[in-house]
Image 1: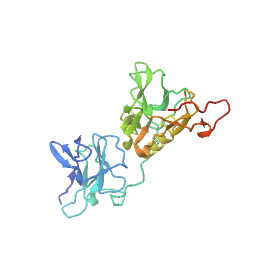
Image 2 (image 1 turned 90 degrees about the horizontal axis):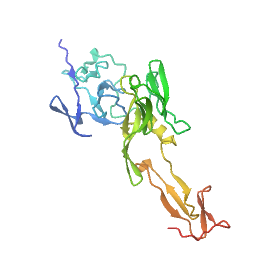
Image 3 (image 1 turned 30 degrees about the vertical axis):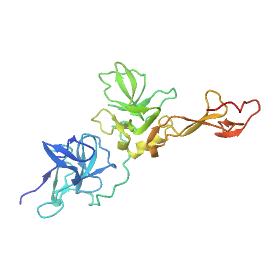
Image 4 (image 1 turned 120 degrees about the horizontal axis):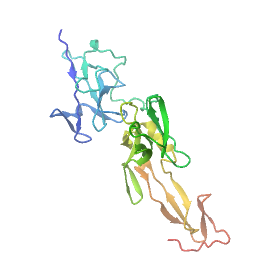
Length: 299
């Protein structure tokens, strides 16, 4: 009996977030697959789908993830992805179920699995590294003997220390002979940074790359997002504070809101009514304290 299988050489050149890809000069319509946000691509290639046997995950050069179906065989049976045939597109393929060892039962590919979390292994960079009390960035680097914590300003060897590590919007790289902190790219306009105009450090879990990459918010795992949200050294929180110039009636309000797509927002000025003053402890306007001028002009 002839053995039928389909080579899975998926798109390698991204034309746009949606549309067609180019493969060996021919266009491949991504409508046959589904763009998903619950799978984190670490490198280009084809990978096993963790939810089903008859699909696979195609990661593009832009690290976008597509859930792709295997083709139907000549006997009208859905083929299964050969899970150890990737990630090289030219080598990965689907085959008939009897020829494929898959320990997953086929599932509804339209139902996303639980959110992917950052796995913890002994060969990867740790996520969300701490910042030292002095404000210097520290993070974990993969070394032959295990993970070693390095700190901004520490000595390094550019010949041996090729990997990088980071946290939130910064990463450490060995330049000349010192670990230096560099910021991931962002676009700030009039004190505002939109969430889709900022890159964040996404730790890698592959020993084969440099340790991580500056990535859009949408490409971070849910675990990394929550870590960054809860870290006061990373994400500004809404806050109310008194006027730093001493106007007792004036206060400043900042409200960067991720739900509105804002990572950083400027402080807006407000004024308490004449005859009252702002109390920073209570974060509200209160009756005027004796000795304060609560009639001072407040723009």
